[in-house]
Length: 335
Image (cartoon, rainbow, N blue to C red; front, side, top):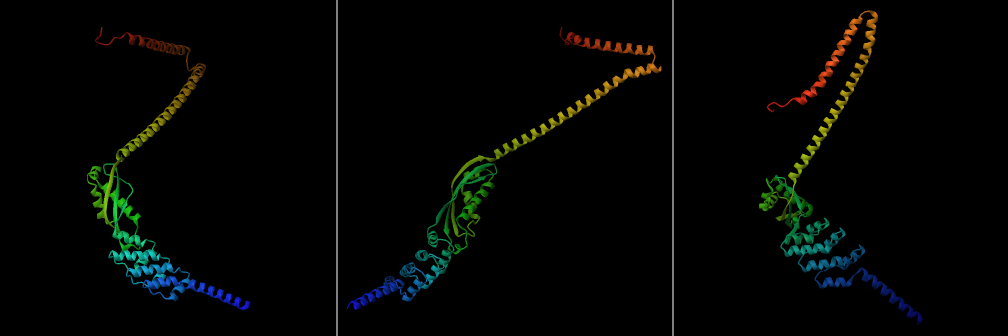
């Protein structure tokens, strides 16, 4: 008896273990839920998911949702997209939203958009309800030198056909900013832009800035335009300051050259004076030599000395009389 009881316990344990293994590989509750929802999934497909380490709930529940929405999809299609790294539930939600909005979208197209890294469900929502993108403040300068700071609101709608490979919001914002700069820069005065802000909108829309992007631009509205700096006047002031510094540098250069020239002239004069003093020092020697050789007589020497003395006396008298005459003279017409 004890041996038979142990055998029965062992059999029960084995059966429980086998049943647990079976229920692990065959999620009967999930299979029954799918069957009750009208989705026929072979048990072998569920076992295969377990073997391939796929959580069956991530595929069965989206398939039930798609079946209830009237989408003709198979568990194999969902499994393929899941193994490729896609978000099955998001793709199914996008397909249901597109069907409700009468937007043509195939399952392969939705999978491609999802695998491209874009939120396909959000893309469908933006296709139904346009999104408003607000650009940062864009500074531009008109031809009169006045800076204008503008901010725009861009209303865009998703273009499903260009969603794969199309540029994103950053490109749209950059192109709109470029259009604002071009429009303001081509205006003769900043007052033209302030009086007609829609000039920017028309010009930017005519450029077709949505080409090559994943969006279709519906409208561009200028939210705010402010007057900034007077860049033209500032540039003129900077240019005048630069010209002043250049002129000052050139004047300093000329002054330095004049000082150098003056120093050279002083050096030349001093050199000439030294030569004159040296020559004057040679005069007595030359006269002594002339007297010794008989080339100059004594009377001639004293006559020369008298002439020199007479000349020096006349120069001293002329220098002494000139200030007195100047002080004694009266302007003509006055007594």
